[in-house]
Length: 151
Image (tube, rainbow, N blue to C red; front, side, top):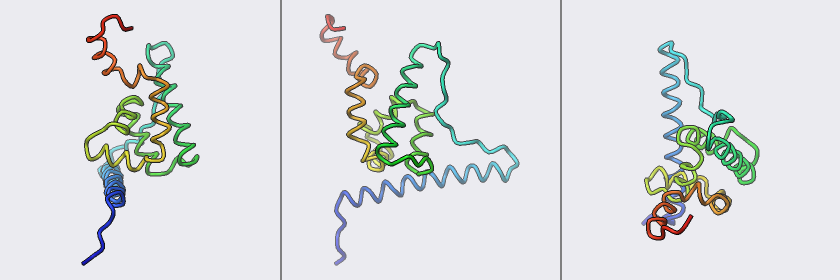
């Protein structure tokens, strides 16, 4: 009888496979665009928002904090699969939704992302504690319904 893999190892393997499949899918799309003589879409990086737009400075601040957390957790390399996938996701959904997905996501892709970024979890939790209004906005609005005197 083959030896059973511990659940944690199995989840890590599933996570790695999920990330690789996503990366291969993206690469296949880019290759298809090149073959069809269509311009290949460059990987999206978080773009600097307009300085006067409300909430934009918070977004920049959170993006910068996440970059620092990546550097502290994984080193300065920007060509890692974890960082490339995360930067694309941050550009698509924003830093708040990214952190919520990593910490509290329930879909299999969210769980895979959480496992891949496991080293970052304590720092992301501290980031949520530092910016509770940004990350816990839904919870705050629900709590205000129960206690209207809360700000």
